[in-house]
Image (cartoon, rainbow, N blue to C red; front, side):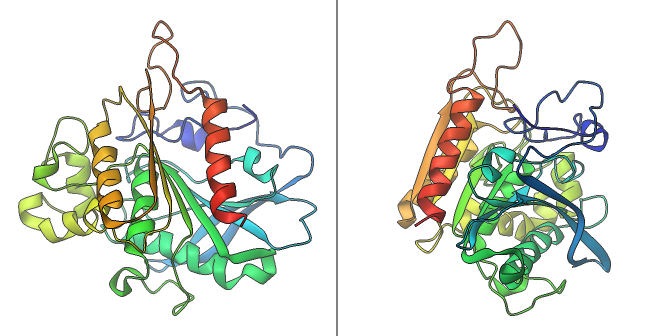
Length: 315
């Protein structure tokens, strides 16, 4: 795969939830050279898209050097890392840019710096920023999709189910601009943190240390926040189309979480497809070299995701 992961991203592999492995390879390898965009693509680093908690938030933009005549569809990329680690730097999808997409990997406040709902506020801010600057970036403001893995999968699912919810918009900039998105690709994201849903992360239910850190307390202490952050509880007919991808052997985020979200979206009347990846763990690939290979493999997954975005964003 023509992708890259830098030292900052590698350092958080041991975090609660892994960074995306469909798009970023070699998580346990030594640091690689600085990412060089493929021919015909341009990288803009450290682009400020607003503020969160009084500090600047940044995006990494990867886009076509020569944009098409018509405004481009866009995909915002949201990294994993257990809400406590990970980085937007190194999370690139040149295979989308190659097909005419504008992409931006975005930063959000981590749980060590700010508690929920800071994370979704920052993600919503990124959507508003891109929509408000659509003309500047030659982007179609009505064709914005999102994609994320693990904790990032959870956040994109929240973007899809929580729409323009006023109390989650934050004050980081571009107030009054819609934060709705038109397509969601959720890979292995937790979806329901309530006790009845079973474990959202690992085998813990409402006392996982990573979740306590995110929400500032246990479920008993902060149940309103735990429920607010559960996209499966907010599924509605106005949700955009969802493609949910999950490894059947995922031991970090059980596939039952994605099943629950898919069922809730389907029941609400939203469009949703759940793609089960056979033999795959949390990284959407086999956990061990001796294990049977994942089905579908990473290239097929990329093709499936591209076809989904084309259907939703290139009408």
